[in-house]
Amino acid sequence: MKNLIVANWKMNPNSQKEAKEIFDAIREGSRGLDVEVIVCPPAVYLYASIFGEGVVSMGAQNVYFEDKGAFTGEISVEMLKDLKVEYIIIGHSERRKYFGETDEIINKKIKKALEAGLKVIFCVGETQEEHDAGKKNEVLEKQIKIGLDGITDLANLNVAYEPVWAIGTGNNCGVEETKESLDFIRTLIGQVRVLYGGSVKSDNSGEYIKEAGANGLLVGGASLIAEEFIKIVKSAE
Ligand code: 13P
Image (cartoon, rainbow, N blue to C red):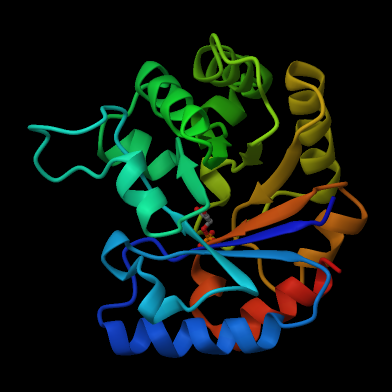
């Protein structure tokens, strides 16, 4: 299976024009490479006329677990499928922290997305405090146990280990520690693709794939700079 490199643009950029420019450059730079490349823009840019088909797949940063109805501001799995979105990031630490998403909510979202045939990038990871208290494995175990409760078909599941303290800080997790966490996640879940995320740049990306055994990367800040992101994609070949 190919390595998976995912751009999580978060709430950036501020215009369709910029989104298209970054996306076009990523698509051209990714052409012909033996890597699966996914761009997850803000939902307002998730339409094929901006993104075009092929080479790079589209992913959403969020979804709601109900089918339709009176849920102001939310987006359903059917809406995403209609736009040809393939992947959804679920359980990102920013959704947990700023939008009150619990493991139980995350579980409902993962179930809904998988039932709809969408591919999921399920994010897990410990905070600085939990890390320093030696609770990393306990936290990962809880997030995974509740997040995947009742889910048996893991074919479309990918997991991203994103230590919260490594996100947007420049303090990326060391290779040894990352390897331990990825292996621990595999012992809990079995054979799914496990990605690393947290201050990934082109000068550290290759070591996560080659030394830590990650099956891909979830990239925030560096994914908004097409040239830098393409270097990261190439390092995963
Ligand atoms: P940074 O790459 O900016 O640290 O963000 C990581 C992340 O949260 C990706 O989902």
